[in-house]
Length: 110
Image 1 (cartoon, rainbow, N blue to C red):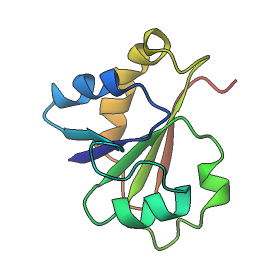
Image 2 (image 1 turned 45 degrees about the vertical axis):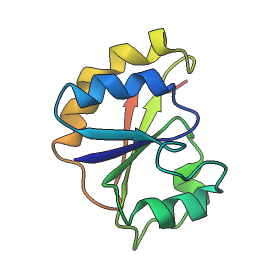
Image 3 (image 1 turned 120 degrees about the horizontal axis):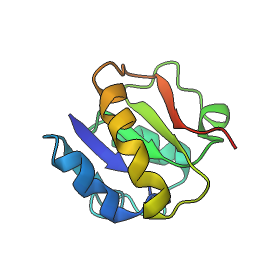
């Protein structure tokens, strides 16, 4: 599965997904830095299956009805890698069933 890490997600987290066989790039690596959420989703859905983000408002700000990309929303007490790494097993599990235009939240709900 092709995964895209949003700019708000620490880039070192991509190694945790690559180990499980997923192809994972950061937004800057994909040449999509500094795009608005709507533009990012439109461009990313051409080449990626899932956007991994910490932006809890994205599902309410964007119309995902016809979107071909899914969103994996990480919920942690902070964006520090130490707070996000414990979510990786649940993320990998969620990736097995996620579908286009679906938003799956992983982690606590602050």
